[in-house]
Amino acid sequence: MEMPFEDNTFDAVYAVEATCHAPTFEGVYGEIYRVLKPGGNFGCYEWVMTDKFDENNPKHRQIAHEIEIGNGIPKMRTAEECIAALNNVGFEVTMNCDLANVGDSIQWYYPLEGDIRKCQTLKDVFTTIAMTKAGRFTTTNVVRLLEKVGLAPKGTVETQKVLETAADALVAGARENLFSPMYFFVAKKPQN
Image (cartoon, rainbow, N blue to C red; front, top):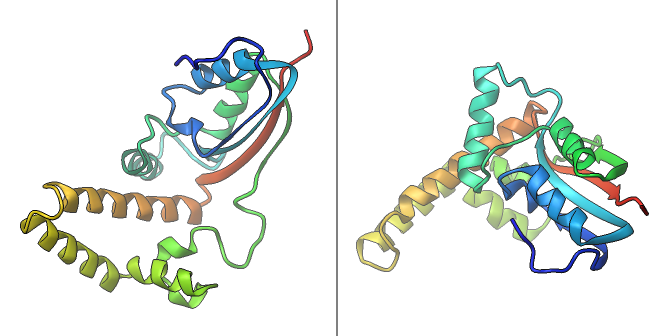
């Protein structure tokens, strides 16, 4: 991982749900540290497993694995690993918190649940209906037809199934407070 920028180039850096796709947190955070000017801040919304995640629990590992496969993530890491990686590359963490679990009556993952009672807007209705059993069945069969007549490439149905599994894992991980897509932190590069 090498960003095409000189050392100490940027006053600030931000990332939103992106750095979780890097092979290691240390690798991507190290590059961010390198290109950030001394005294600069790095703000990030990170996908992490929470402190409730137990690596020795097969169900927890299965949820993490399905999130990884369906979202192109090499390894789901914990919030603790995130903070350790920031410290390891030289950052000073000035703020960190999980914004996914702040007591909202309707959780962030509601469109993935397929429960239209939780819809907030007209757009939500269409998204949520697509995630119901009937919506998934319809989508699968339309995609299968498109694949059969050559309007969608072979493997599109299989890809859709992987994405459905990933959506289910995101919901399961969130419901059990094992996963957060909204772990927020701000880290500072020291002046010296």
